[in-house]
Length: 304
Length: 304
Image (tube, rainbow over all chains, first blue to last red; front, side, top):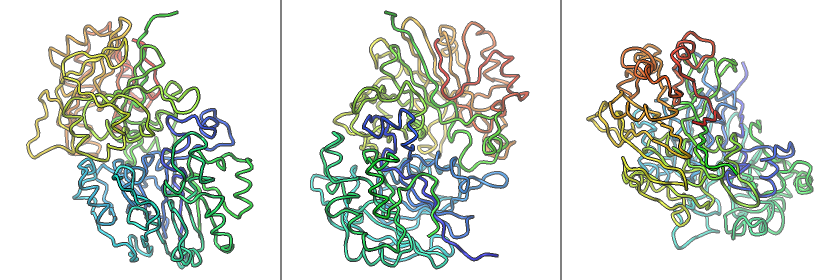
């Protein structure tokens, strides 16, 4: 018998909207719509982790969750009657991309829904989430900055990173560069191995530096290739940083900030449709690979 | 130049949860999980209609909407930059299966969201739907029982049918067999052709009879093969009628009630994973075909 071993499956490697995005004809989406083999279709950001391969924790429940389950053998029901390997779900905040998939987890399947008080309060205030029946799906409040054990042998800690609050809660006054409960990373540990999951992050901090140095693998914010991308492509009027995302390249980028972490496996996730590194064989993809990074894709299995 | 012609595309032919259902190992789902070619995968119930092939109205926005768009050439963006052929959406009620897909229709795409006052009020009370930005997506209240024109040349009327209120709004006292705003059918007319869309209906009524007699094609509630199916399969404790659905066969069934409507094209939609008629070549599928019905499937185009 083998001992516990930490495994992660990238259920969705795209950012909000996925690739292609439903109403988008940007350069990358055009290739995806045309079925060009250089651009993989990508569903919206989510990660599944397990230490026994039998019971899985979902980090975020994306709008594509039903498809992600049918496409992922490890998450399909087994045995007779009703069953799911999904034993627990932890939305990292109340982004639409992170909670909509909860509406798929109906049918009276027992599981535990973990979240910060703010996340669970926001879900409770939106009655539509009551379809995830309270008598079979236990809501459990978890603190920020404290490790807990959502599944036996799997330890998880939510920690704040610089970012922004979800768009649909955004008020007139927007705090972007601050560390708030609105954007969190997840430190995952099991079987003696450590994985960091940080799908959104506006800038590097000393605390985050220290966590990266201790990790065996990092799945990190790969939203944008460079800071001006959305504006240049005519897709928006905000810089990457204003959207709460470090770019892959340029000043204050991930490739720059991680350059000295050569011993850590580095994988980009939460990759936006605008990002030219999504085109396999492109100069941008080559540049990212040369910097020691992998481009995550749906179904990618990571054993840190 | 040809004139307007009514076209409908079945985006999703399954009931809530689709086929296979995420945590289900019933007879049909087992075959679907195993990749058996006799059972097609089915997404959750939704219909797209158009009279010009350029601008489409969605009847219900299912949780599978993103996938339905990528799988349906008519709904993909065209030209440069942002675009969508989806010009309007009409959820028939606030079932999770009917509104969750609205959360996919972000990215500041102008369109019109039609709904009864109750539907729009319920959406407004769930702030998560504010991601469908109010300044670009106009909400327009439509009455029950009165025709309106959501797109030029396309006329639509919502009418009550016997049914039940959405589960997540269900209170202690449940009215099932009544005609309420909770379950509505849609009468669609364009280019001189008439289509009825009734994905849920608990029993036949004289008013519905009259509408069927005038239609060229009917897409109708095919949830269950027989009234006891959910109980027999161990999937629930409710009869079909208690769930608000006429069965395909038996007393008070659709095949019985429609037997004299031989001139109307009859297609089952909203088919539950428990329904054995979903197995191609099965005796149940043969029985339905012998009664003059077609089994709808995802991507099926209907020109009434």
